[in-house]
Each structure stands twice: as C-alpha cells, then as structure tokens.
Amino acid sequence: MKPRILIVYTGGTIGMIEDPVSKALKPFDFSHLMENVPKVKMLDYEIDNIQFTPPIDSSDMDVEHWQMIARSIADNYHKYDGFVVLHGTDTMAYTASALSFMLGNLCKPVIITGSQLPIGEVRTDGEENLITALQIAADRDETGCPTVREVAILFENYLWRGNRSTKRSADNFNAFKSNNYPALAKIGLGISFDYDALRKIHRALPLEPRYNLDTHVMSIDLFPGLNENLLRYQLSAPGIKGIVLRTYGAGNGPTQKWFIDTVREAVDRGVVILNVTQCVNGAVHASRYMGGDYLAAAGVIPGHDLTFEAAITKMMYLFGLGLDSNEVARRLAIPIAGELTITPQR
Ligand code: ASP
View (cartoon, helix red, strand yellow):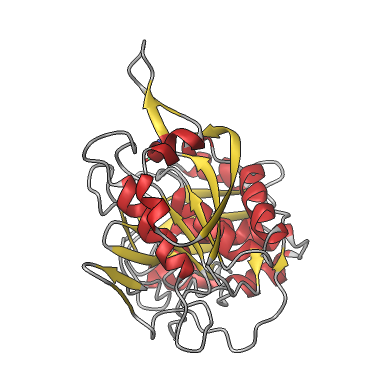
C-alpha cells in the first residue's frame, strides 16, 4: 500500500510570491507551490491537500486557524497515514504547541514545515523541507507503526518536538531549535531518528480532538524598572484568567514587598500565574533563590522547562476545557504531550 499523506497548506513564505508593485512577499496558492516541486511526484505516495483560502502569512494566525487545521486532521484522521502542515515560520512554534494539546491521543505524524525562501527562488529551502516532511510523515518502524506519533517541526537538518520548539533565526535555514529537548531526528544524507526522544504511545486510543481554546490569557515580561501601577493594571485586566510570567534565570523575580503582594493579590482573585524563564535554555527552579521562592509562596505555578509558546497555548487549552483555576493550575505543571520535564522544586 502506498503511504497516504494529507497536506494542509496554510500559507507562509514557502508558497509566497513577490507583489509586483510593493515587492513585498505575499501568500499565493497551493498549485503554484506544487508546480515548483516536481520532485514530489518521485515519491510513490498518494497525496491529497486541503488549503486555506486565502493562504495567510502566519503572523495573521489565530485560534480559528488552529481550529481549522485541527479539524482538517481530525476529520481525515482515518483516511491518511500522516499529515504535513505547510505554515509560515513566524508563528509555527505556537501552532505546533497548540495542535499538540488539541489533538488528544494523537498517534500519527503531524509534521509542520515551511521555508525561509519562497519555493520559486533558486536557493529555496522549501523544496527540501517539503520532501523531507513528506518522507517523515510516511515513515514506519519495523512493527509497521508510524515512526513519529506526535506533532513535530521539520526544518532544514532537524526534526523537533513541536511543543518544545522556538523560532530562533529570521535568517538561517536552520530556523528552529528546541533548547530543552533533543532533536527527534537529524537530517543529513539520511533521516536518523532518535528513538529515545520520540514520543512513545503505549496504547493507541481514538483521537480526541478539543477545539475550544480560551484566549483570556496574557504574558508579562519582568525587567528591572517594572512599574508597580502598570503591573497592577495588567494583572487586573477585565476578563483575565491566566498569565505567563516571564521571569529571570531559574524563575526569579524581585523580592520587594509591593511586587510579591501584587502577584499574590492576583492569585487570590483566581488569576492563574505560570512562571517560565526568559532564558532560552534551562528550567524554573523556584526554590533556588529567594526571588523564585517568594513567587512560589505567592501561588505562582512553576513552568519547569516549558517554552513560552507551549506555556501560553497550554493555558488557552486548559481554560478552553472549562476547568476552574485550581484545576488549570494543577494541570499546568503536569505534562500532557511531552511539553515539559518535571524538575524537583525542593
Ligand atoms: N512571515 C512569514 C510567515 O510566517 C515568514 C515565513 O514563513 O518564514 O508566514
């Protein structure tokens, strides 16, 4: 049986062309993209596609688009062996994170890719990325099961776990990285999978898609000079349910009383505050310094080694399930789709 793959084309640089007047890149249709990758026909796969009309620059990505992608996969889950999502790089890591939570019990490959240069350009990275993504989506292990059973980002030389990935370069072909988790595969002459890093599914359960995401969440970055009134204002924004607090180093914040009191008051009002580090690598160890310890004592949840993209989408997902703040807080610190590694906090 030929592998059956569904491509979901959302837009992004990979399919863009230059606007004749402004010279800016703008999304273009899927047939243009495929005309520029004749090599796809050399793969002996059955490939179908679903496209966004119109395709979008991923800076326009929103919750409704995530719902459309998740629905395209869920509605066709039984018909295909794997899924390739073509997507702009700017918000790819957010989409990958959101989909990893929305597609409960996923045990087929959902490979997201795009490119830094449009497919029509001579030095494009789009052709190689698309072909490799299709090959990974079709790959099976020796037992006949899909090798990848999770949402992953394929870009240039690496396959990364989607909810561990971050866009790290606006210029390099290797645009993504997972700073706290190994690559799922390295792409060179061949595709070399790291079987220990890949997500293991012990029992294949029916896919359980969850489309509802609650956007009453926000993020606050700590920086020296943070203004008390502005912080208080943000923490009491009407409708706010959850905040990802981007702290220093191992999860530290100021130890001043006004700061801790302001945070505690918000927690007491039922706002869930999740502590993630501003560092690109490493995890929150709340009790290592006083600043982190005070935050934990005020009821701030340690985000361990979550990326910001995974933290904010996980909050949207958990509140979208209709859970109360205590339950959201509890589940934030527990892995759902391999997005975090629990580090002892004491
Ligand atoms: N702005 C583009 C997008 O995210 C960038 C890209 O695709 O690389 O859609």
